[in-house]
Length: 299
Ligand SMILES: [Ca+2]
Image 1: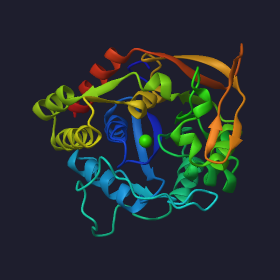
Image 2: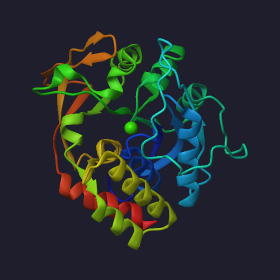
Image 3: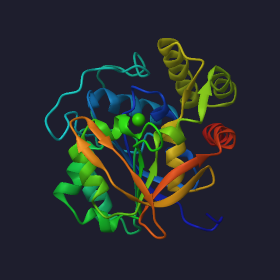
């Protein structure tokens, strides 16, 4: 993007609170100068708590004006996911006063925002695709109103038959998203997982950043302890860069051939000269991690 371009309007749909990478995607979305974050929606499982975590992080960072709207906890086939909350435990209060557009219904919110936006927005999803699937089912014209759909999800390559959490958890929603016809940019798990953040990054964020960065660093440290990991993949924020800049992920146009089963969506991709679907093939992880930290501490 050139310096004079207006920031791209963005909606972010997230399952923040489990894997810690959503925290970094949220702050990147709120802070990257190339983006204008219209709102955040939460999805999958304990969505009320996910919304509280997102609100608290945004508030700590001075972004309390960005609406956070609670979405669907159950999948489209009615399954109620169990509580996990690995990274968000203890971070946000169990209850808080209403306000900030709380609990207005993420599906309606997404439809309103996308249909009303003067500039076609980007919708980025970094959790299971239930909210997006429900919104597309309710308003199929969404697909033509989006500048692009950016999705962290799917697995290609030798282990493709395992699928990937975000696409597996709600196959019907995944089908609605993959078949909607919007321009789709997919950050796949085997590529976006190459970028990892560890304790040294947490220390840098704590040393140079504001209260939101300290909150992110605390959640990262807690997550690393709970998972007994030295570092952890940054699938979501690396995928989010597809909303403003393709510098960190190399993409290729493909025709996707998904296979749907219960809790499993297997992707097969065939190269295409021209396609409205691009998938990630390589990551510049070191450059991305520097970019992520620099953008987070800039505010
Ligand atoms: Ca996520």
